[in-house]
Length: 82
Image 1 (cartoon, rainbow, N blue to C red):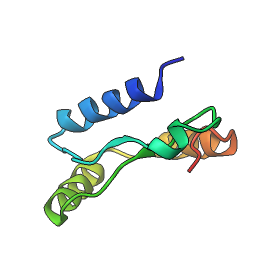
Image 2 (tube, rainbow, N blue to C red; image 1 turned 135 degrees about the vertical axis):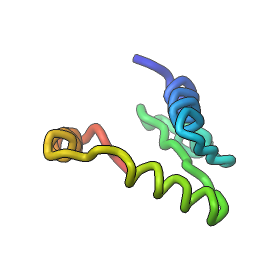
Image 3 (cartoon, rainbow, N blue to C red; image 1 turned 30 degrees about the vertical axis):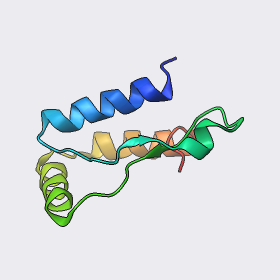
């Protein structure tokens, strides 16, 4: 299993690959220091231009029913927790 830091770095690289930089992206220090087995990822704050660019990138992705079904499945399994 990858560490939270490795996952955050992978997310940073994936976002950069589509031209999106979230300047405050990091591991949440409070949950990282707790006994919580999965620390939260703080997506942080960004300016309006970055938010708009991220929206454009997300909307450009082909989202079919297969992806929606997979997201619903992961949510039911508790693998996408907030």
